[in-house]
Length: 349
Ligand SMILES: Cc1ncc(COP(=O)(O)O)c(C=O)c1O
Ligand SMILES: C[C@@H](O)[C@H](N)C(=O)O
Image (cartoon, rainbow, N blue to C red; front, side, top):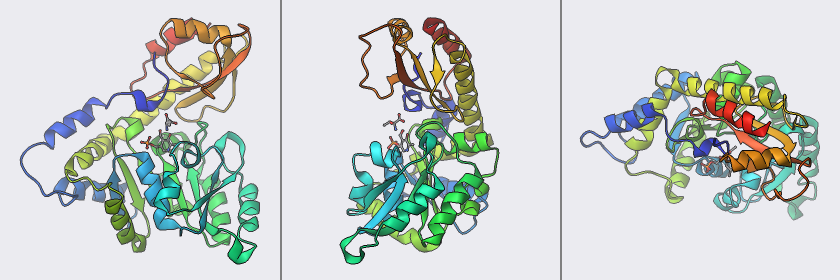
């Protein structure tokens, strides 16, 4: 019973089979191989973006930080939600790779930026001229760090604000597939058609071993990304093994199937928790994560039975009154089973 993160799941068997199949013989390195070329074409097709440039990296943090670096100057502000991963969990990588851009935080429910709050925050930034950081870019996470999903209309509401201030927009799509199948739209509708300039297109959390694609919809920004990826140490020499994962991930819509499964498991878990006395959901379950407050006694029973997940925030204590509510983040993945959820709910009850 592991609900700590979709990062704790293994790689889907099809991904491993794809890696083995790609291991034959010699191919050019650093991305000049046919598998990489095929994956880049496939992603352009999926996003209906024939001019887009596609680059593979091994981590979501690299995808995000390098994307920010091509979208803003060191003196620029990166407007993001206060709970954004680039703010809370990347150890300053966006600030590092942009040579010092400042993350300027915006509020909104369920880790979704509120468009009016974004507009006020951008308007406030840079008014002092040379003495202030300047307006740089906007970064949106979909699905969010609270398990919520921006619809294409939600995305457009934020990119419309960004455009009013002539700012580019990045989407942290570490869980893009989970957001997409939840929203029921096309990849193009969720991204460039809604005003997104660069997407971190996640594979790792949704079944891959370790690969993320950066999709740059404006080819003018591509060469700088290539330079920054290399100098940042994120250009894989045996690049075929990143590409082989993405190739298997996209084949036969595996990426959509794994996301649908993870989301369905989260719905099952969320509905089950809703039946537990004293328990309550903290955020809507719109993707593959459940955020819920449960009595301390329920957590203790589940932990004693071997369940592994994070209290959220993680530094809450299991010592104290049994009926006190403690919040937790419970993440489902392609590997989560209905039996695992039933067993977990049985221990919580
Ligand atoms: C929303 C979000 N973005 C980006 C990342 C970064 O991914 P990585 O840990 O592979 O750097 C994560 C990690 O799980 C994440 O949850
Ligand atoms: C760092 C931690 O938040 C990781 N990104 C996860 O979602 O599990």
